[in-house]
Length: 210
Image (cartoon, rainbow, N blue to C red; front, side, top):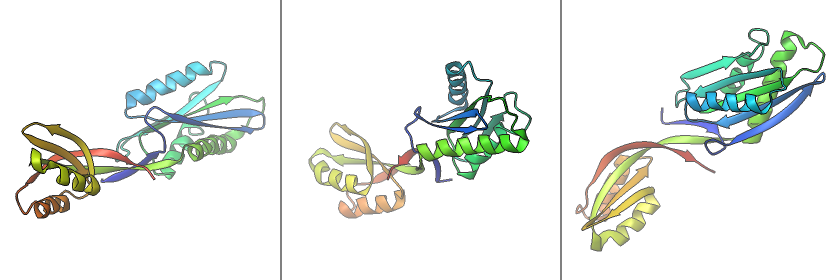
């Protein structure tokens, strides 16, 4: 798994959308999170905002492979709220997010089918507001170069990848994130006529914006 999609928001930020069905209000909130604890904290926070509402139905998906998934009907008939919310999240191919749909009862029963549609539609509307972005697993390459040769090489490194940090001592040590560590290593050797060597230094997830 080298990439996946998440909300088009910074971690901790949220988007909302509201729909009305037969005088019942459905307020959907989606927030980008990093862990199950973050998701559960978000659920409790939103529940606290709207204590007058009858239901706060939820779903969340966590991890690059979307392997942690939970949903809750919060008192609605089984399978009519949490599962439809989760199906919308999965249908959009998203992870690292939580959705909470708060319902204020309008006096008219919607039936199982009506509830499924309403919870799903509210969630989809909030996702449309948030948008999506890609997260990509990048390789990290560590490069050490003599101080007097650092300037030209740094310029090329910044063109070839993302310079995460640079440590200046007798030599300059760069950490560079790239989509192709092997190609960057070959390029560094070519730029320096073999005088500068690069080594693998792990990987990290990065948002790809735009």
